[in-house]
Amino acid sequence: MPVGLIILAAFILVPTIEIFLFVEVGSEIGAIPTILLTILTAVTGTALLRHQGVSLLMRMRSEMDAGRVPGDELVHGAFIVLAGICLLIPGFFTDAIGLLLFIPAVRTYLGRAMAARVQVHPDVHMHRRYRTDEGVVDLDVEEWSSREPRNPDAPEDGPQRSIGSDRETPWRGDNKS
Image (cartoon, rainbow, N blue to C red; front, side):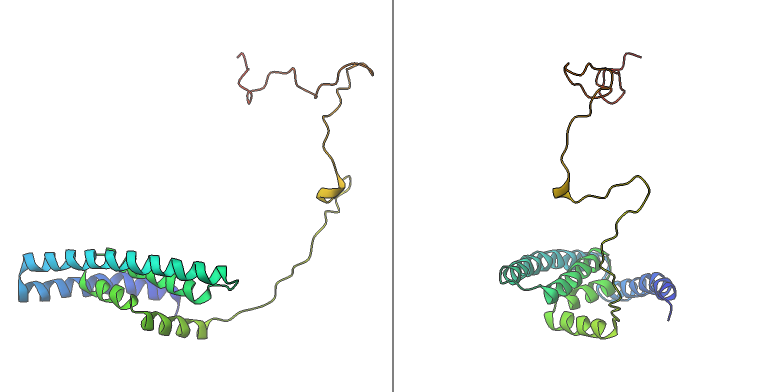
């Protein structure tokens, strides 16, 4: 299924489901309790996001301190960010998805399911390309040094100034115009 079609379906279906759930829950418990429940899920989600986010950052740091790549932690972090976004969107459907994404077993399952579908193409060319334009000398950092350019109008034994040092330029702020 094309990605554009999936995104279009999500933009149509998710708000429709949210409106339906608001109407159903509101008719069962009333309007004010429905609004309060929506606020409660947002506050709960924020607290979960803070707690699990800090915990995840500490696990990532310990993995990096041990010299390992925190691959699983990065996947969990992406799902935690997605969970936070879902909890910021008002509605019961997105809140349910967000709260499900806070469960580590759900994140692990989804991460493995997505990783099984990813195709890696190791067709990367890592060679250095040198410029071969006429008049270009390609040097490494160790092969060159920097000097002030010589002013061709200065006498041979006189003081050296860089070319254009006495000109007015708009970049130095000394332009009189």
